[in-house]
Image (tube, rainbow, N blue to C red; front, side, top):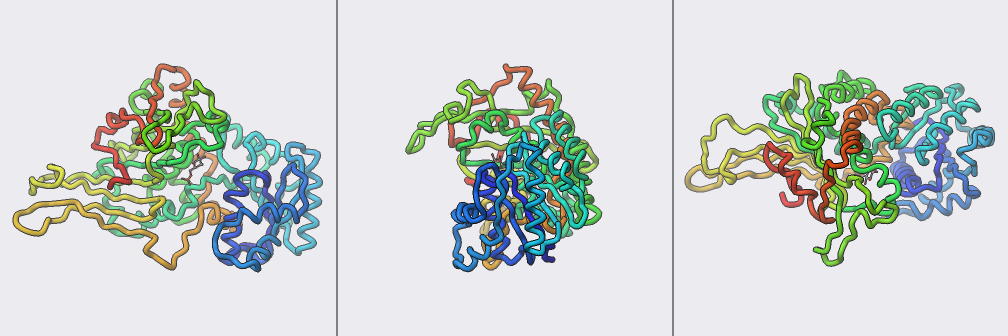
Length: 492
Ligand code: BG6
């Protein structure tokens, strides 16, 4: 259904996220005819710009695809701009006035979405200032607030943030973006699991040997060294994106596909995570940092040489860990996750490793053991699903080899894969929070990672292993994986 007409206010309109993700996503929705009949996008930031100047600035960030001048012009007409000192509560009556004027001028009901695309230190003052001028009250139109991660930097600050947000907005007005949930293939995990009769019956400890989740990036910290050095892979990727993937892989079937039904199940998974105590961290969590590499054509600088990074930094750019989910479905099944920057390939995937057959009839398999059936859910970039099964090698005897049943989304030529931000923005416009994180789950995920962060803080002797940029991370992670070997996606 088409969303209701509304005004989308983007705080931090001159920032990177607005240019790289939000404007392109809105344009994508525009070209797909998914935007509401009437929409105003009001950019808000300190810089003094006119509407026309803002439109001109945003033009160059429209995605590089075939589009007509008419398309571009029609899209740009949605954009407006309001200079505002966002951190200054006294400025908010100006914003309110502008919104009222726009609503009148364009005959848009007072439906407002506020997108906080700002540094997190403004997550307190903006909701509070909005509330002071009544812009949180869902009268004569809805009022929704989208916020971007980081949702706190530790458990304590995450709780404070939630408390603060709830002082001014109700939970059902809050949309916490985790862009991984906006990815088509991440949502497809629910469909794979719950629309097929063949997977769910074996999706448990009786048939699954272990679960492996990888999110590898080839990029380093680029120009975000200052931010990243205070964050690291645990806060940047694991606490949010990877935990959400764990939630979807491990959840019980929700009663219905609705926001709270699904988010209740995610929360239950997080509640069942077996805590890793500080004493267990060195054994179960491996952290690494990329170091200078001279192997490729051009030398690649190490993390500590990056702009904005402390030359003695111990921030992890790589992390691998093993943990358990203590519930009926998963008791005893190890979960492994790993993520890192400057690895050899960009790939995110979930691998379900099934148990071997109880008896090996064909001694001569390709790995001298039985076939290791794997279901690989490829999240990106080569979106698809791969099932590895044993097949007879044609000819004499019973030789077995592993073959792939492989589906690639790219083979569906006429299907358009929406961008994560496009999907999530559209959902918020429709009032659907299913793919947004709920406050209690965010806190639970923090509860799980907090002892690990504490252990690193309190025990500097826990090593930060160096790995040359462009390699698969510290070699010691092979010892962490007691159940076999990590999958190296670009090789097989
Ligand atoms: C962001 C992190 O949330 O996710 C980045 O801050 C990371 O450091 C990015 O690169 C990864 O997202 P994607 O969609 O490219 O896998």
